[in-house]
Length: 272
Image (cartoon, rainbow, N blue to C red):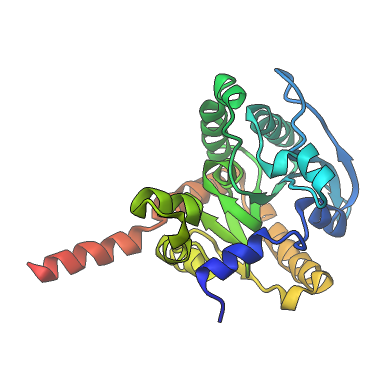
């Protein structure tokens, strides 16, 4: 069985399919839409319209790229504020026209450059969190690689969150955590274990609903699994009213970690 840090390395692998691969593999007729209507188009955030079994959907992904040239063009999958504002613009458009939103996440985190901070990186992420909580259309988020910090969470406020078997979801990278806690990035292996960032950990903590098997890297098998799961999800959410959907979404996030907190409180009371 792989260690937590081995899972992190797997999630970062350059051989791993990117968000664009999932979009072209799962949907038909993808049309990319550009720009946040405020500053520019962010190439680290890819989004647009597509068809799912004849139904129009909005799809979004943080895109890392494959080779060096493309990774530089995509800013290594680290969006600027305009990327998150573009994503929110497309989600609000989806809400207006009643299209489900499906997000794919693979990012080490939001870009932390000076320009990004000057243009309101934190506010852009916060606005996404706030707006997605009350967005009046179904939202599904699938973690396909790295799910790092607020950069991942900005697409993570969904009715359901799924995670691939070797993907990770964490508030900070293991190296960053080790540098802060032990002043030694070499302890990343220990930090990864402590962060509970693996797919199994995330599901156990009720941060994600499903772990999607990777079939030893067989991408076609992964796509086939996702097709079946997405179809079931579509049938489920379209049978709910918008009010029921929003109530369930709110309740979902209120319940995250609640059982873990109860265990800690119970343990403290026992110690007394």
